[in-house]
Image (cartoon, rainbow, N blue to C red; front, side, top):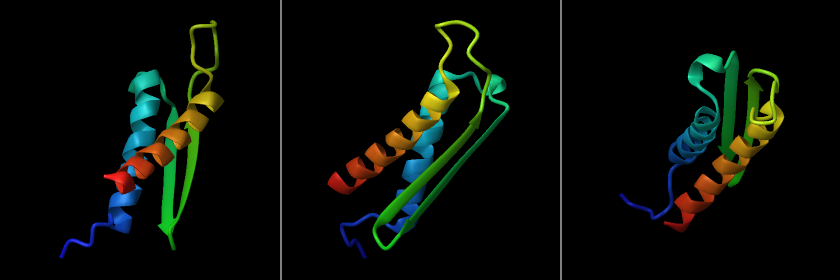
Length: 86
């Protein structure tokens, strides 16, 4: 029953995994106080919201939590684009 298109569940899972993967590539899991990735895919429209409560920037080497959240949402969208291209 292969349609060639990923299912809605596959799209949501791919986006969520990509966003969480990016977050935990930049922060140790124990440093993240709270993280919520909400993904919806309805009628061909992908929505990704990332909430991240991580340590504030103490040095210029520390990642900016807002930038990490934005990057995570972009990573989710890129992963879904790649899923559809496969």
